[in-house]
Image 1 (tube, rainbow, N blue to C red):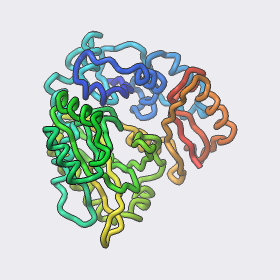
Image 2 (cartoon, rainbow, N blue to C red):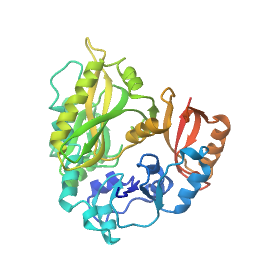
Image 3 (cartoon, rainbow, N blue to C red):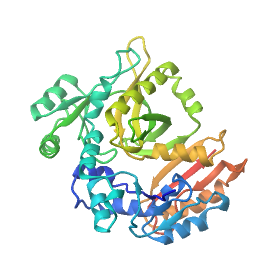
Image 4 (cartoon, rainbow, N blue to C red):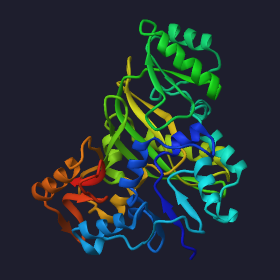
Length: 391
């Protein structure tokens, strides 16, 4: 088996939006990448290689792992090796770095493949995917691609409260909540800038959301995209990702079926497998997620399913939490997969030590059943941290 190098590059969405080989990530995103660089070790197949900023991170992870037999069986490197890569996501900046480091072109995506990947990653694809769903009172979801400022203004005036989205942006970014009464010159300036740089803007109604979740898929690069599981997640008041619920697919489906019939979920899944297989074809190899939401509805139906809020054509936290649950967590356990940010040095280490005391780890059948389990190393300088909290 040819060993592959797994890489966590969270700047991917912003680099894809920027779409230049010379994109430089903000310092805070670089800090995130460094703090969380060991993350792929938990989902990469055994025997593969994890690229980290420093091998000290790998050593610290091994020392802090409370269950040595659960330590991932992977290799580590801190330089750009000449080998196949499995990054969080592909973008021109990463390609440029790998080429400059002497990585063989046979291991890389071509410029044409990157162009196609960017096209498929654009939020405009959601409008095409939504058209594939047959009319149903149990489904909602609409989006309009606006090419001019006047189109946007007319949409806002006719729709009322709505969301404007840049076609490409960092996850949870590039979104503006607006209404006819809240339209300002700064929003107009933002819209004109996005239109000038990216060509258009997505406009969507504001829905009364009650649940965030996703369906996760895998594209085999041979024209087939298949469902691998659910992702039930939480966001903050700004829509930024915070945590995933750790439960089996059966349990998550039971939670969702309180709002939406199971048959509707299954039909949605089957429709997306067909649509994504046709849309992606052979252009992409790897995991992807389709973000959805359950919304409060008016009329005879209490809730409706929005089947395609966004498509993330890359690895994502929902897939990671799903794979970790399947590999390491007892099937009857419940809890959260949490991504936390700390504003000051020492804060993450203090929380880490506190959780070790207040949430002692317990195993059942050699799998995690209860307590706190850190997935990324923690030291005084840590600002970003990923961990499991099982109850």
